[in-house]
Image (cartoon, one colour):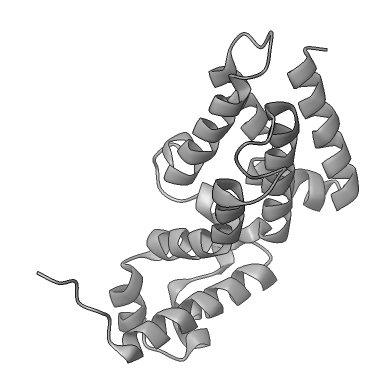
Amino acid sequence: MTERKPRKDAARNRAALLAAADDLFARCESPDDVTMSDVAAAAGVGKGTLFRAFGDRTALIRALYAARLEPLERAVAEGPPPLGPGTPAQERVPALLDAVLCFKLDHRHLALALEGTGADSPYRAEHYERWHGLLRSALADIPGLADGDFAAHALLAAVRADLVEYLAGARGTDREELRAHLGKFVRQVLTGQ
């Protein structure tokens, strides 16, 4: 059985809904302020269309997050150094974490919304497991690092959306200062100092 292509209007509505949600999350004070009604109204469609396209708010947030993250994931999977495969771990790990930090700074409210969805653990989310696995694998090549699994979790904790929001929002730490602090922290973990 061949997979059915979505109707043109359904594809157009989906794109409009993602664009509307993206804009609303970018402009909101808090991710909790963005409702399904707001997204549907901003996209110029009914709530039923929104629910048919995504099912619920969590699925909408996941779809938008995945769409925004896709260029970074592609760079990591097949791009050139320092993000791409084949880059020595000492260079790739700091580059990966810097890229994740920049992504979360650029999409703070969306990242906060995703990390705050559902009752299940954010550490079991598909995107988290992918980043953890990638880091754990890269850390296996670092001499003297005793526990790459734990180190991957600890390094990812430094780029959690709630921490990024606290440091950039509440404390007002600027982007370049955050990147410098993260880079120093990652180097210390990798060199054991």
